[in-house]
Image (cartoon, rainbow, N blue to C red):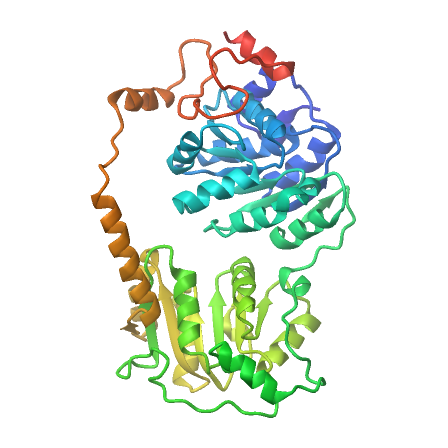
Length: 495
């Protein structure tokens, strides 16, 4: 049995031939088709069979062609293991000209940060160093196709589970995620619950639940007596107002309160600044705290991300997705309808599949792709089922929202940014412009640009290419670094 049956690129097959790997291992036979299919995976891996995830990872990059930005992120707790994985990528990706960057806890931080900003196709990182670089540069990962969490069972050391959680906050897309572990310990379970959705299990028999199920909202159950006086004092300190008893009705409020312009219609949109959609949503929810709000998102994964953020506010939040069974779905929807929850998140579902009537407001966190869906939601407002619809419109949505609205026959008006967010943005702009004025603009030297342009062509000599990220730490610090094993043999072959 060979690798050709998996439809791997000729360049990747040549890389496997270089390192004298002719047929897949048992683990590779199980993982390759599943990972190539794009599913989330939890796999038990006891040997150093790193190719089980590296082969499909590199294949994804070759399929995408010329794409800027980091597409694969590998997180592993050990410096030595990170170096080994980086060496393997170097050898296997030679013919495909796939570069990688190593962000180990030792090495040149400046070079690591530059590789992050430049968009190395693959980043192999220790979680601690990776979050340090992301926070320092405030860089967002927008192009990731795959995240590999390697040796998950070792992440309980040095608070690395929380480091991984922090890294995921900088991911502005919905990549496929693969978790690898040797044992089912607390760290493995936490990472599985945090990152995976409906994963395929290889070697484990772990019960994998949705994040909203494993992190229940801390709300009083309907049959539990609540001291309303104490509860109201706590809520006043939090500057919000949440209904605690199902037989208490919400107070009616004027439609122009909570940041809504008095002249606006019942359908509106907010123009969202770059990378501020979550902040805009949270600021709007802060200002409309007395309302019950329904938030539509494009996918269950986005809904789950928002759930983890909103639940920290103790507002009362519940989510619905297309992957829930009927019992759980009905139970959550009923809690929202009975005034037990203030925010209802709906991920990946059409509004016409849900019984919604008598609510104050709903928010299109993601602009609907289809005019029919937008029209249906707008019709809910016209029919009085919901008082107001607000769409959060990013730069990418600005052209489409107008055409969709015109086709649907409902033209929304623009609302200003929530006041608090607008002020913070002005302060940030002033600080950023002041900082930039004191610094000289960076420019690339002709020599570096020349090296970069040459990296896109196949080298005529037999030197393994590391054109952009060669100055990074790891097994290649300096020119005289020696390597052992199969991949060291490859390096000697091409010298």
